[in-house]
Image 1 (cartoon, helix red, strand yellow):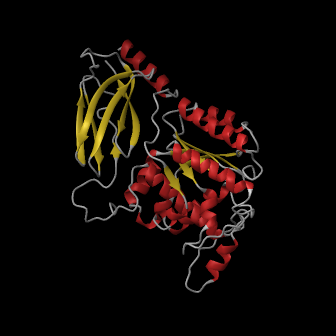
Image 2 (tube, rainbow, N blue to C red):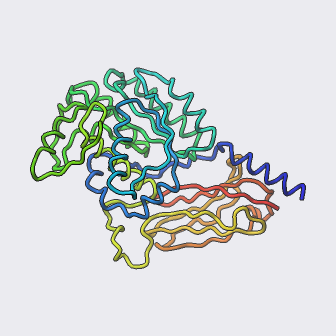
Length: 362
């Protein structure tokens, strides 16, 4: 009994630490821009609920970044379905040229193990930045992703400042966009959302005040919700960013936007990619891992130990769409029994990557 108690205590301590695994990020870029606004209504209710259940957020922002939070509150006021997920909000932003002071608190909070999504927004710091300064930001974010591979990091562009397509802000935002596209990052494109109205009209010289929002909402053919205040801007700008946020997280959760998988007439195929928690957990002799895929894909399912070393590959091959159930007998790749402790199982498909943890007690 004493040994069992010691193992449980050890497992709890290990679970409280952030464990460094091999690169786990997403396998495809996700760009949350103005196009996502029109797809918001197609997100299945089950995906929204999954986001609230599976993700907890660290968000460093000042007034401009609060526009996302205001938008989420506006949507929650319309329907309890959109009650926002759990957020830790810190009064901080990405600063100005080469500033990395935001990193320290982010690391402190991530080390608690309480958050699996990290976001930092710009205030005016993107407008007066330099190519070298933006590279410092990008490199620091990439470094954090390497150090916390089980955390999802959201990159952001800076808000519009009226300098147009020939201004420094446009160049710096494009620098961020190019990096995210080239390195399969997740980008919340703050500026792009402000640049287009829902009819697709482009406003290259717009500012963060979103003057087109006032014009668009004044039309008798459009209905825009109100809010107490949208910092520096129009309520519709905040409202749009709230919608785009949910779309972005739906994509992170595995929903294929624009594919029609939200249609209930899709037969018996799963509606989204999902890796379920193993059961039983903790386990002794064996455990079951099941996952679902809406499309056929090459699949790898690997188990890692707490040091990030691969223990065994359970699946490595092409699988059809549907539900898949895998039984793991607690043996390593050599066929030998492994020791008690915390382990991580990672699912990697052509469109989706995610990781969960489990506890083996003997």
